[in-house]
Length: 159
Image (cartoon, one colour):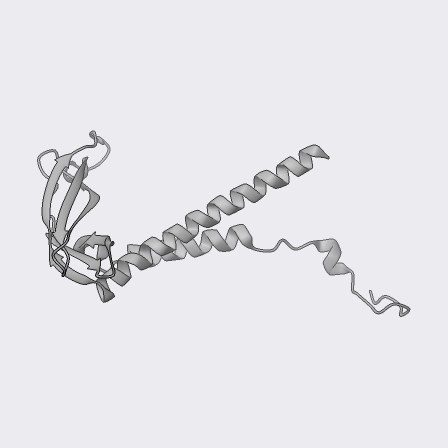
């Protein structure tokens, strides 16, 4: 009996964790789309440094991970910072746009234009998030309950 309770508790915890991951995927994609359509755009100062090691299985133009730090001033003149990671060759991270989108009411929610611009990845991320939430929280059908028809007390059961 104790094993059954432990298994159910473990399943419940995993259902919560995977649902949270799905919700985070949806929120991340919606944040970037919202930044593009409703956020303000400004120019950022960018510094790039190579952080990741070589991935020899990738093509040479995407072999390394580069850390991109940027800073920008909001419309009130206050400085804010951001960070992202890009793939690049062994000598450069490629061309990185210096344009950044941010929300004036929450400038800590920001993204470079390449991340905020609408792309195929955002609907895919939203779809995967919805799929995770749906799969982890769908009701399981109990075949023995579906076969029984509920009837009023005193009346015969209908097969």
